Length: 265
Image (cartoon, rainbow, N blue to C red; front, side, top):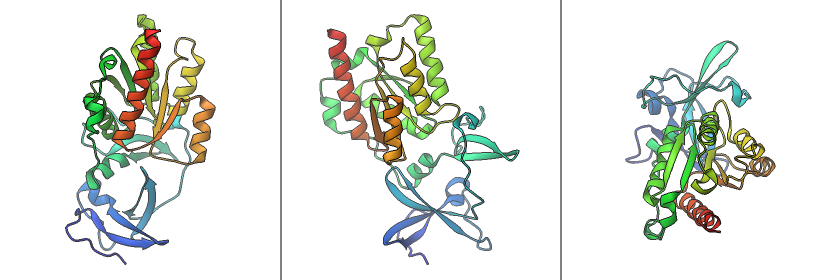
């Protein structure tokens, strides 16, 4: 049984107590389609921990859990607009499976803080004017959030929708003869992305003599020792959990300072 919340979002069905924890239950159909789950449908709840928050998604059913290789995950089709809730698509048993952008759903339902502390805006970020950040994330909402943080800090950036696009961008800059050592301050990459994930992107960067010096920060909605071990294995410099704007701003600020000091030597 669910307890109702006064003045809650219309997509929040209520609150449930599970394993000694109180969690909100979100009607996923209502969140992405605008219509509630029909009463005659058998309802199930998928409990998730995402961005260090626990919530339940009300769904009609759950078939199974499928482990996929990120190379088999493709970006959503072009021309779909920017209001859809897809972050990727794949095929399972010859059927097209759509992968939802949970970050977009939660941002609209729960809300997110996008503004950073004034200390990062007012601080002396002079060197950042000549430095650049490469961002790779398959979630359009996440890219928007990170760009807002970087814009507030006065840092220019290039946005890529997955690891493959980020790798191709890096290769393009190398071919152009751009001075990446002094210009590109850092690569900020999501972990879970279609076509090429953040681990694979980091591995390629470390194996390329022209790029191996780059400072790479991996960030993800997931957490745990398993991720930290992989981060160390592929050679990333830092690992950050989503979504804390000030923590991201601090990471960027510290690296910009280190990068500027190295360029001055």
